[in-house]
Image (cartoon, rainbow, N blue to C red; front, side):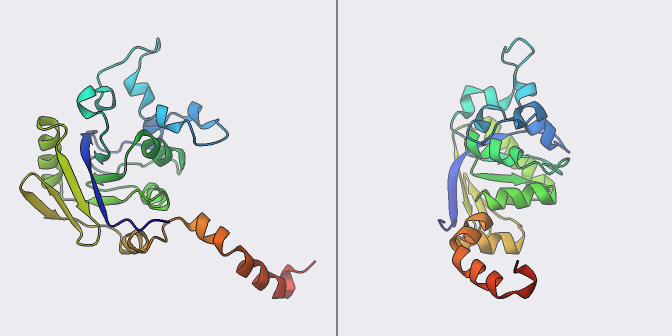
Length: 198
């Protein structure tokens, strides 16, 4: 797994508090066997009408094509614990999410995919959102090691869960992969445990 130390990319804004996982990806798109096509579905019902026509939404706005830093408000990712929501955002192209706050399970799922969730105070989120909407295509730099976000001439310290930050910096964020890589050791220990013998 790669170590995630700095992320560079342009920004995209989704405004509103308490945006839940069902809004991020409607439940009917969770039936696919793999996550491979999830990138088509973020905010689907807010982006398209019942006839498939595009509605006004940042994810449909050509000014934000290729954006990889999503900026949100309070309690983003609340609701169900579905992994499909961060999968959909990541596969759309999001590499980091900056917000006022996040639902804990959503944030943990993002970390396990190598997508940092970092927090800033509301005033700074408002300023960053305004800046992105007025300057689409401007680069944003997130430095995980320094816990600092930079855009234009501004730098601001951010907060994030220290265990998540450590796993990103050390390249140990994918727990499933860690378990698979340690399979032989796990099986060896399991074979020595009397209550696991058949």
